[in-house]
Amino acid sequence: MNKGDLISKVAESAGISKAQATQALNTTLDAIGGALKDGDKVTLIGFGTFSVSHRAERKGRNPRTGETITIAGKNLVKFKPGKELADSVN
Image 1: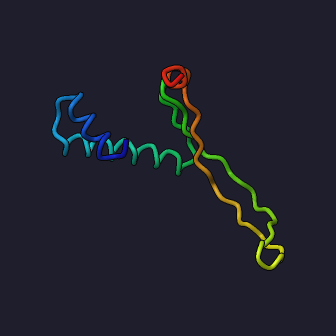
Image 2: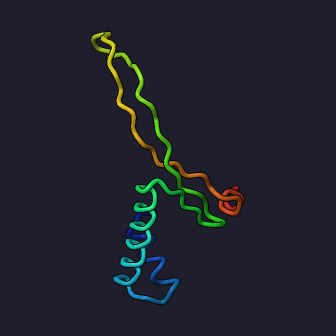
């Protein structure tokens, strides 16, 4: 399922237009992204938790030359599924 499929499903289930469903989905995703950008954790009960984790700078090796390089640290988005979501898949 891609974003377009999800928008169609939401519009059909909620009895709203695709334009309204698109706006609702985009607003939701923007709110989640904004909270994560601010360093907050987003918990949707029954669905899961989005959080930000920091990966520290580390040393690596260029496989072509064998030269040691520094790999910059970065922030990663993590998702931990909730119990209901995990149980529904199994």
